[in-house]
Amino acid sequence: MKSDMITCSFVMDRNVYNTFKSIVSKQGQNVKGSIVRYMQSVIQYDTPNADTILAIQEVEKLKKDPNKRVYSSFSEVLEELEDDE
Image (cartoon, rainbow, N blue to C red; front, top):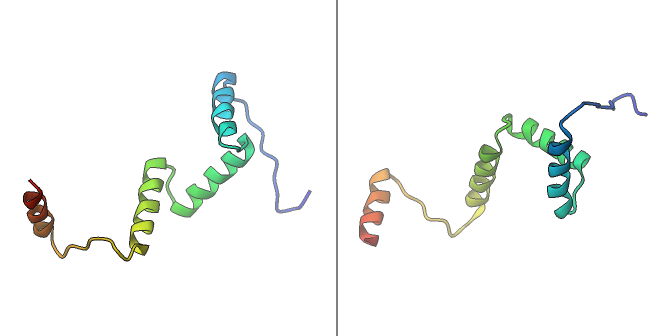
């Protein structure tokens, strides 16, 4: 084994493991790969909150969208909302 690699071992509730495995298997993934990807996303975004990670990814996608709507103030947003009514 490489010197920069470690083996992780832990004990967990069998039902939690089986439920998680069932979910990730339906997506063509495995438990180990899913856990490693989660750890990498925590490192990348410096946060363990999945909702926050999804929100950051959404913002990154919007930043790249040339057709996105841009506002210069919150008042403009409110005016548009009033116009839609």
